[in-house]
Image (cartoon, rainbow, N blue to C red):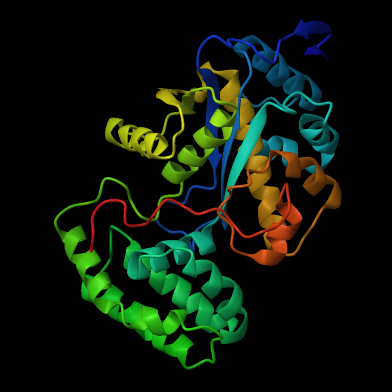
Length: 347
């Protein structure tokens, strides 16, 4: 690959470092902790790039030269400003710097909560898509919002109030939805799953689980590794520092990769300012989160969506059918399975 950036020519063979693991550099956008239904964002995005450090540095410098902001560290928000639209389109374009060398895994937070809840209580996360697409449209927006909030509270590790209140509140919303004329029997089966909910909350009293059920970052990393290893190469991840990525959780990621037959060669945590590739991953994650959130809300910019679509992971965790039809990089045939919510213990 030959590219001209910042007035000089950079040549890079796409099979760089082919003798060893493929190094993939990641960052995320849209983290709200365990508050997935009332947080600041409705989409979580995990961006990744695979580029040499020097080439990434040249691209980041090109962004700085084009935008000319006095900011010390550039973020996706700089590129999302209307006055910098040309820089944004250049970054994502087929002739741009990251084409063919970047990927973003999207998570629709509301659906993620529903999937986690259904998977935990029924032992089958695939039923979440039925509930989300068949029953959600007919039970009423306000009732559905109450159900989402109650499900989020049920699954939270840290609660303000008694655990029994969270369980009682959740099943009250289930009963309300059952009386609203749902199309399927998923809510009926959820209503009968109180023992599993009680057992889940009881186990949390013994201590926080290794893998928080409501955290989208860890399964997103698993999906990202699977994407980049599709060609048969092992993947070594370099990730922006995150408190969530402890040694024990990185070991869990490796375990999930082994189960899926995916080559995972470890993870290194670095500070974003020391690696320009993380800045590029941050750009992609923040841009993708904003565009996907707009599409979810019914605001479609056809140019930006068309530019983003090739980067979107086919295994993104997304339940809303209308918006996924717009964002999906391929034929729409449902969504990928997420890692089971029951990853810490049986209930």
